[in-house]
Length: 225
Image (cartoon, rainbow, N blue to C red):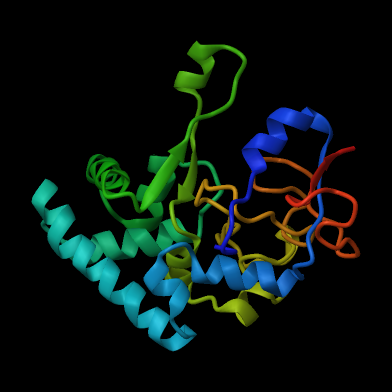
């Protein structure tokens, strides 16, 4: 997204747990990237035209790809579920709770979740445990594959996202039921600033606002602590 390689993976293996990262980006710059997401068509567009792209993309995906995979009786339920999921991004994925909130039968909702995963709209992050068995049966977390789509479904632009009760605001100030917008692109291109939750996309320390990229840290901006 910045026009060059990120090199996070290389730095993580080189420096291990002591990795540090510096960045000249401000909080609003990170929010701009979250709202834009990772689709080239969306990144290139102005905010209003980007919203039209997301609407068109979601409609096409549901009407074409999802319907090719399965017969959906009530398409409106699928869009309703998508909006509900966007508000729970980063939270535990509990089908029974979602069924109660959406009014969609649990068996149908589980099938919808599988379809949304199959077309790469959402991703289930397995629970972490030292034991494989516990990890397999643990409750996964929900992530959106593209943060721009999640922001669009929540109706959050950069300004709204950064407000105290916005989706990226302090946890205690967000509206009830509104999850945290996370860097779920899984491409290591964005480090979350401290105001979002104090860690980077993988738990690494977020860049202090006073740091400037590349000051004594090599071209990548990474160094060992």
